[in-house]
Length: 158
Image (cartoon, rainbow, N blue to C red; front, side, top):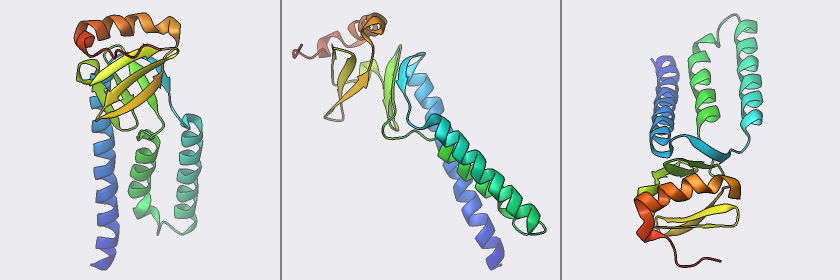
């Protein structure tokens, strides 16, 4: 009984985590729209690290006469969560919204905003945040912001 609990509880939690991560990414896609610019941290490193860990677990499972093989679903789900989950330093600007870490929102949900230099700065949950956005890519974002949130453009324009 304990062995089953030791197997099913972590596996169930890993699958729940994977489900929530995928749901968050799908919601992000609907809110942000087509990505114009992004700064994602550790993308290739995440893939290499996850692949090496998975390879190590598969190797250990085969060397141990399959005793560790029952933990493979948990490990795979956990590695997928690690690979797919947004990092707090991630920044994404799309045609209809932004994402910072786990938080994504449509432009219409921003409290305030301004395009200054090579950043889109905006206030979300009472906090100012900046997302890198090259000057040559700002025009479609400005047009969309003016359509849905023109009254929330910040008066600070430096």
